[in-house]
Length: 178
Image 1 (cartoon, rainbow, N blue to C red):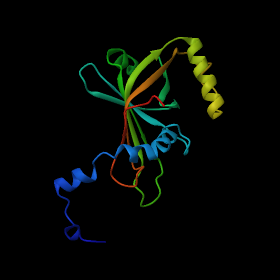
Image 2 (cartoon, rainbow, N blue to C red; image 1 turned 135 degrees about the horizontal axis):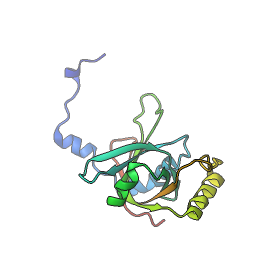
Image 3 (cartoon, one colour; image 1 turned 135 degrees about the vertical axis):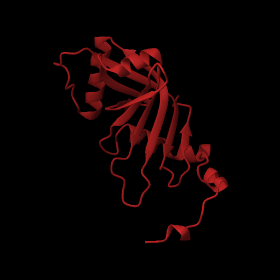
Image 4 (spheres, rainbow, N blue to C red; image 1 turned 30 degrees about the vertical axis):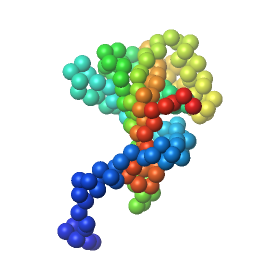
């Protein structure tokens, strides 16, 4: 084991340089990998959803997601606090993190900030489940539950992906039209 005093010291300028945003060309190179990651194509995936309380304090919960393109869908029970938080402030965040990164490899993570819409229409929710089952094979396991289901549908504003370029540089995305 090496002595920490023997490691080279990072200056503030070096840290800023290492964490500088990837160039648009670098980010574009990994765009599909980032999308596949949040869509769970690289293995089972769950996310953490962050909403804001009225006083601005964050509230975070693990949630299951189904991502179509860049739009995130999450099913919620009508009685959960996160729904009231979203009604008060529709800006939410999702965080996906590698569950089992390879030894010695920096874990990948994706942070998404977006605007969340609460969908209460049963037909739209049933259609969401049909699309999810067609894409993943996972059926609606909540059909007989005794609570009202809501669909939380989030349209991204900003995505920050780390660990996809093999360095500290995050890839940032602001355009989700393609």
